[in-house]
Image (cartoon, rainbow, N blue to C red; front, side, top):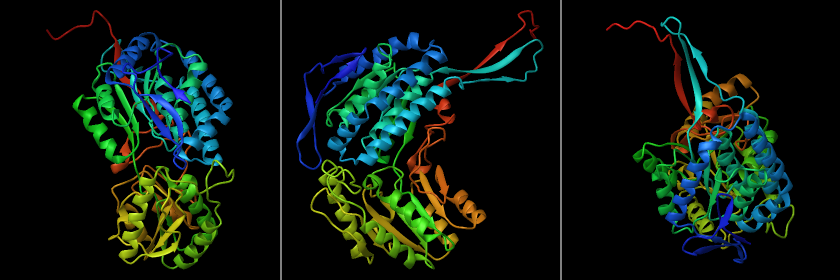
Length: 483
């Protein structure tokens, strides 16, 4: 499939004629050939968004709601196309692809409902005959950058929420999932988005830094939202700071699942299997660390390992029920091999799986992980799961917080009062008692703390990210002044 840039709702090639190719992570076959935007292409897209904003900012809640609801319907009609694109571009299973499409459609509908919830308030004032109030207004064109791992739902939130608030969007698609991201943009165009309200660009990997920097610097762009690695997030934040532009960052994590000594072990194992191995652990909130009270650790590890051994593994293109598919690249597999080697050399026990010479990486469980090991602190972003044994509840909390990250967490325990206390003590943006670390609902605020970023997608909290708060007064023109 060939994809072009979309500016003013028209397909256009890069001004340089440059293209790049996305290959299947297993076969190496070319999946898509995409236009590679230049810096000038990006500036044209930003200017288009600026022009479109002049009318879109005055659109009514009903107009925006209609666009978002129609977009949700269009996304659902493209289910088969999304599944095919995600399988070929990122090695996704039917389950993960379908899950993405469902979440994206729900998100657009939730965004549609929020169009009438963009509200201000009246403020008490000392001035007689004066009305003091706040209103929320659109900020302007937004640069939205979404990653490849949850390409449908993460692109959906990067597009739907700015549009909901009356902003326009320049959406920079991932070079790893350009075809999948193009399908989201097409759904919005089919729903009737006016020209320039959503501009779609793709960049070759070697051009991406310059293009993104140019967009952040462009005076037309007023907000930036980025989902991706902490390393790149720091760069984005620095560049936004230089231009005094607010950004919303959802970055990496080392999500802990704590299993207390009174937990229902079978239930905890089920949550751990889902959280650890959905899409090979390549989700920002994947269960990366399982922190188990040493009194129940042996039972948990035995049952967790037994369940993991049963997971179907292989190539999603040929296995409909595949759970453990390929990691995104051979480079990723090589990195995981290095992490596993380091753990074993420093005394960890390999319970299941191990190294792989291909991107088809097996479900891997490493027990007796300690703080000296790379796997203890570095995000694996793959099906390599650490078991860390805690002495007691306080030790489990300390281990959970012994990380630079803070996105998502889970706690299992029958004593709900204690489990809730533990959940409150974990330094993450979300925590689920007796549930998995992998959870997302469009009506609930989602984002991280510490090196996992700042700001919140989803829920009413997202309104603050994509609007400006303005103070207004209506006063008595004949009021008296002190001089």
